[in-house]
Length: 385
Image (cartoon, rainbow, N blue to C red; front, side, top):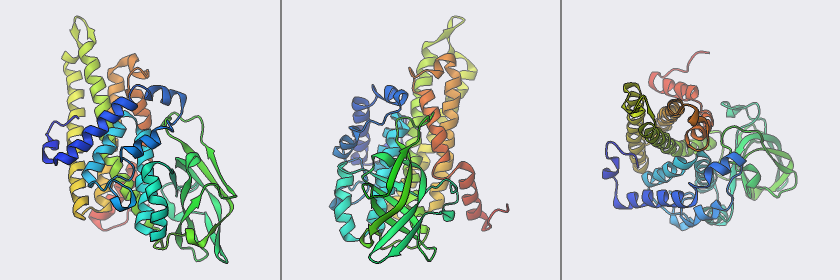
């Protein structure tokens, strides 16, 4: 692991073992296949059970519900190693753990926890998270999906967009407004009549990931499928905080990936009789990447410590997501440039990481949205439009 300031020395033996296990798994099971999966636009469905067997799904949730029960720093290291190979694998695990398992654990009934969490942790069951809509984006409070109470059931109508895992999911965590305009959370089995998932095609990013539109046409579910502790938008936003935490770690893995490719290429590629790594401008670019990675890793580690202590705020996560994703995206663009024509081929990881990170920079809060979140936090004022 790229660790210029020796952050790993501050971690426990167990944390380092988790990181090593995750790296060994991804190298053995995914590394040699990922470029082809990405080019073909397919998600490796057989990886789901393997990720479950490794204990990587919802790993920071309690053991009593089938999860690994590890701390949040170790969980972050798993996200790092998944995204070092590809953002699509980390995105799957983030959705499964932070956006499906976490809301059931935090807001669900005990019966719902017992019914769903062990199967989600093992990979026997896959979930998705339905919040974003066509006209929503950065304004989730403007959601148009409605859930109408009808006797002992709720009837859901609406559409969700850009949903990771959508067409492969067994359940969907769906956020909808009730007749009192209050946001509620529902666990919707995807075999319920009226539910439809349509895959989004022609993506040039996150190609080794399933992205779907979810359509709800009079989807009737029992009232027992509502998560009882959800009343208001704060619930789905809290789930996004959990997922953004994993992103803040994960993108540093992608940054390591493009840095290592650029370093190796520039050491082996010669022009005018010398390796291009000997050029001042090339070294300066590599140093910038290393510096950004080092800052990001220190921030992610501290964020994990705060989370384990119960002192992490959503604004802490906004800063880490904002800075680390943009640093990884910048590094991937510079690394692509350093490889010249070779940088556009899938023989190297760089173009794949670069295109994936365009999505990661956008979803779960854009750079600008997190700037506004932080600006409000430090000034106490909402920014003027």
